Amino acid sequence: MTLPKWATTVTSLSKTLALIIFITFSIIGFFLGVRYQQIVDMSKDSSLVISSTHSGDKGCTLEAKICPDGTTVGRIGPKCEFAPCPTPINQIFCGDSCVKK
Image 1 (cartoon, helix red, strand yellow):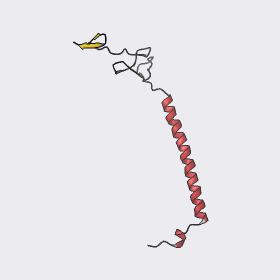
Image 2: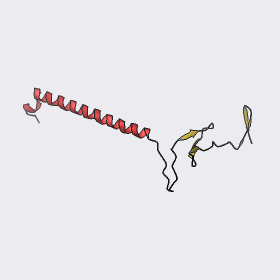
Image 3: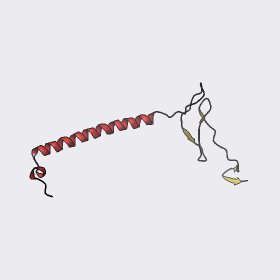
Image 4: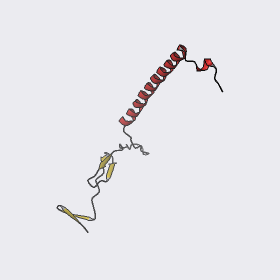
């Protein structure tokens, strides 16, 4: 099927229209990207808080502390302090080397 000549001819009107569409989409994409980045930055700044079902209780932020053995502990209690790191039960510390029981 052959297209008519008016549909395949590049005119100054078609060039102008293509330029306007290209610039418009570029500007819209830029502003949408800026808005998206603002939303992402706001979600990173706000700390997640565990909600409580009991009235008067407060929630603690969802942070983790990495213990020397590689495990992680979260915040607990009314003061939202980090839980103590677990102590190895099956090891006896003997200076530089350890012996398992």
